[in-house]
Length: 501
Image 1 (cartoon, rainbow, N blue to C red):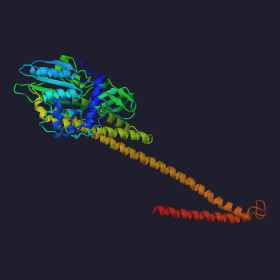
Image 2 (image 1 turned 60 degrees about the vertical axis):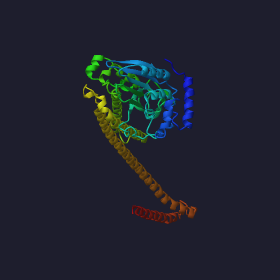
Image 3 (image 1 turned 90 degrees about the vertical axis):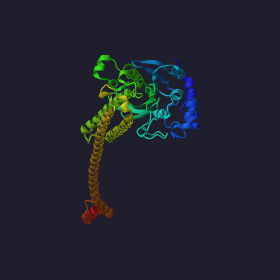
Image 4 (image 1 turned 180 degrees about the horizontal axis):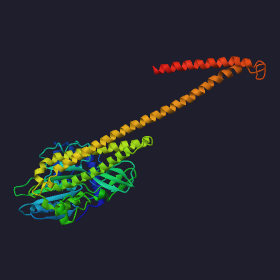
């Protein structure tokens, strides 16, 4: 099993980057060959194939990891691994030899972790996959500028032969985060969000995607399927200039979704290290739950795993909303600072936005599951029908969203109350200051006439204290002080009356 050297990957990455920024012919997506020529021809009908999204900060082709692929052959009573490699040339030779092999029914699943132009060229050339599968999988966010829309999956044609599952994945990191830090995955460019749980622990939510494509069922019962998975995340912390790798799943990962009696029989579970490894485990060890006559059957395990990840996200958001409600109930408005209120308001709006985003993702999945519903369910009970479970989870997210909005409204009310309390305190303080100033003015009004009278008489003999005409000073100054104070009160009362009007 050969691997591309890092220097070779770096030179290829720079070459593809120069080409993708200068050309608008779709050459960025595939390595040279017939599939790239097909993409170039399709650019006339699909402008979103022309160039890669410039806002995606991840390298293309990827330089921080090597994509890997596993090929599983589905037979009547068994599933076995026939290839596992990170070399696209080896995959190319394997598919060529498998095509030449004589077999009654050829049923193959290719699970690919990560993407690069070489693997896209090989799979697209041999399986004749429409390139929108790869561009939709690489589509990183609603802010993407490649011509995609927020509901591109939900509005797609019912005859579309693939589905992209957007889902969140929760990880636990031993770093205290007092604020919600928004970053991105270095491998995929998708958003990541870090939220504080206390006790030097934080959750890291990573936006993920898993895409499924299947061919039509041939006359002899043969079919091919391709599953595209995101690689394990490598998260960049922009604030502390560090990276997070080898992340541990939150709460030790999702629970196995197999029936209890089957869990007791097999006593094993998925590795929970990546979507690639988990799908490999379920498809190889629990294929008997699938109706192998249907090309879309392998999508069942993707639906189940994605459903469990959404449940984990719901649990985390519910904890955060409850924490906000508890803080709101137990808070003393007089002891809260503006920074505390602003932090609660920001957290509340983030949770509301995250809940709305997850509702949108679930809605898109539900819309696209309709054409797959009848294909994935076979004879083993209702637990295999994932659509009702997605709908139930969607309603749970909506309920939690309403709770979050109510909490945010309460926080806004608390902000208004605190502002009103602060304004009242400031008004009381201003009133006290005004009274103090008024007293000082009255004192000044009394002593100014006295000072004026003393300056007029110069307080010299015979008008100085202790001399016979000192009484003249009081005869002049006291009426002058009374007249000054009276004039001030008349003017002040008229001003107050004017302000009241």
